[in-house]
Amino acid sequence: MTNAGNIGTQGPKTSGSGSDTVRLGNVFRELWSGLPTIVLAAVIGGMIALLGTIFLITPTYKSTTSLYVMSNEEKSTSVNNTDLQAGTLLTKDYEEIIKSREVIEEALTSLDIDSDYSSILKDLSVSTPDDTRVIYISVTYTDPYTAADIANAVRRAAIQRIQSIIDVKTVKVVSDANVPVHKEGPSYSKAALVGAFAGALLAVIILVIMALANDTIRTGDDIEKYLHISLLGTIPIAEGEKRSKKVYHRKRGGGRA
Image (cartoon, rainbow, N blue to C red; front, side, top):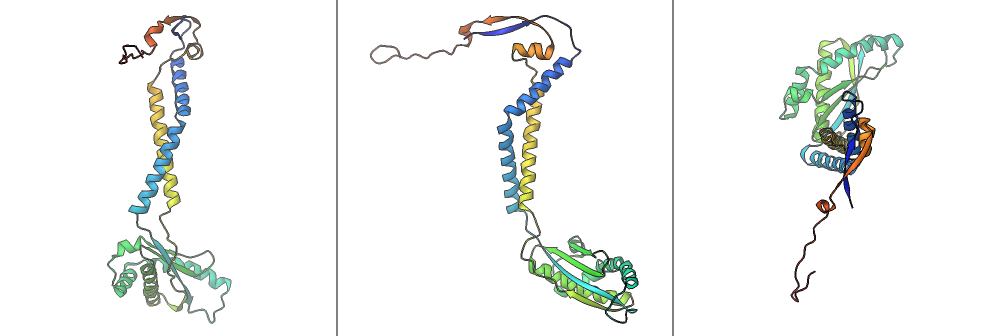
């Protein structure tokens, strides 16, 4: 089998556009030929992220309790639209009171938990659905029972604080904090997907860099296609230069094999 070098005419130059086209073509070829590598990198990245999430990140659990604040102007448990609108304006005040240092520290003191205000505050969320005055207090913690205890303790401390600051008739408990059965996080599937994406992206970046660094023209067709130069002919390369050498050894009988 004979290999050949390529000779082309010196036709019109294209101010580097041909070289750029060669590099772009190399990029697509490298990505296509490296597709198994990209898939393998995605699988490895997903597995690493999944195992790291399982063994290195502690699961958390979210417990929620809710309360309802009634103003002194309400003569009964029935609520009209005016009362509802006025009460909705106060819910932001209630949220700030619930998140106050006094409320959280009082809750922690009653439970004797080795945590401080800042650590609990970042895992505490207070929300109010639209057009309601029901306030939901949620706590995320590494232990489901402790999460429920903290949520209930914060609710009790918040009720006392709200009644002492704002002139309200009463604050009713809508629901006690539940002991969560399912973990809030982390998500194993999300971690695996992120790891797989990161692995595939890293493989793509490496392949692109390799392709851009390799501007070799491999065939005569590449000359005509990318450099727009007509191919005149080829220079044969001696067959013996590429032919694999046979290894001979003598048998005990003196013959060659």
